[in-house]
Amino acid sequence: VYCMESPENFSRIQLCGSYGAEDELNEAEVNGNWTPQEKALHEARLKAKAKRRLRKSSSRDSTRESLSEPSSIEPGTDPHSPKGKINTNDRKSRTGKGRGLPKKGGAGGKGVWGAAGMVYEMEEPDAKDPNYDESSQGDTIYATVVPELEEGELEKTVNPIVQEYFEHGDTKEVEMLLKELNLGPHRYEFSSLAVSLALEGKASHRELTSRLLSDLSGKMLSGNEMERAFDKILKELPDLILDTPEAPQMLGQFMARAIADHVLPMSFFNRYKGKVDCDYARAALDRASVLLSMKKEIVRLDNVWGVGGGQRPVKHLIKEMNLLLKEYLVSGDVSEAEHCLRDLEVPHFHHELVYEAIVMVLESKGDKAIQMMVNLLKVFWQTGLITLDQMNRGFQRVYDELPEINLDVPHAHSIMESFVDVCFQESVITKQLRDACPSRGRKRFVSEGDGGMIKS
Image (cartoon, rainbow, N blue to C red; front, top):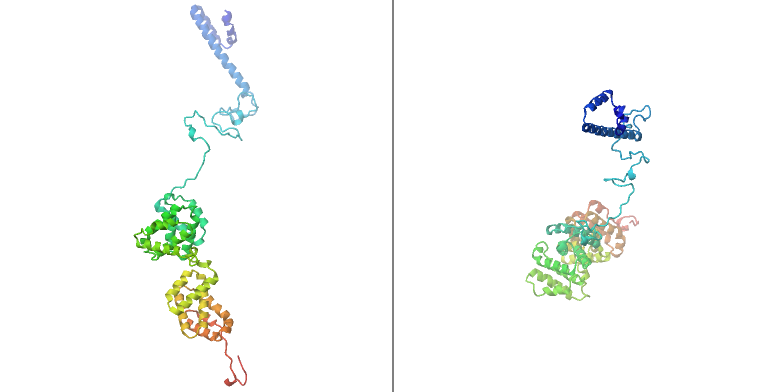
């Protein structure tokens, strides 16, 4: 009866069934004692409560339809299984629309990497960015920065490069290694260190150093840097002569060769002329002055150090060894002969000296040449200047050519046998090498009781 009292309460008809019998009796008892204001307030509360229930029921029905509540799950499945539950973190649409794929192919929303295969374009700098710098905009250039070598590390780095160059002699290799280094203001010291090492080395090392300075001049080292390098070496001469007494003369040859190769200008030499107080520096400048004043027909500055080692022609080496042996036979100075042989720098060709010495003995007259050559070979053998292999090769070459030598020297076999015996007694050759010496038996005639037969 209460639900039909007025038209405003018509909407309550839908909820009457949900109220219990006790609620209707309580409302009927209370309404009889309420004032009009209380009654209106109570009706407003009931309307609000009905609307809330209506919204809850409508949302529950829509969720059940779109998400397939357990009532719509296939029979035989567990509603509490993971497949039956709703994944609240799933990025798929819950509206039931579409094919169930991720939104925007996985490229939607914040904090995502973007769709697969997406290529990002170059972003133009934003002028409104607080870090925007108009002067620094442009192409970015990346360069490898090599730290500058300190003065203490310079010598440790340069010395191995120069020592390796003395072995291979490739100036391009040195140039490539120098490009990888940052020598800074100490670049000129490379030339001074190379010359200092060459002064302590061989003639071939000095020749290679002169070539290196010529090839690096104008490329890696400027003319001003070359002048500073030689200026430093001139000031260090008092210390260099402690290890190399001939340093002033060698430095003079270096300067003359550098001027001839256009590494140093002639003004460098003229600048020091008559203005040097150090005796060693004055000796170096005098040596350079003498070489530069000589005619080109007399001396060629491009060969001021000679042709070192195996670069010399074989004929030239043979000529030098013949001259060495002839001077020794005249002077008898073994130390000078040893010094000359070392300067040739051809240890692999010392068998030629043994061969030439034996041939000179065979062509000479008297026992003096035999004894002098035995003494010379004995000194070379004891000092290790001539090895066992070189000694054997020299003797074996004479053994092989002895028949031809005998045509010019009739008594070559007998002289050879005597020379070999003396060498063996002085421990110059081995017993095996002595036994390998060829011998030719003499002819015996009738007077020796052969019964008229001539035997050889």
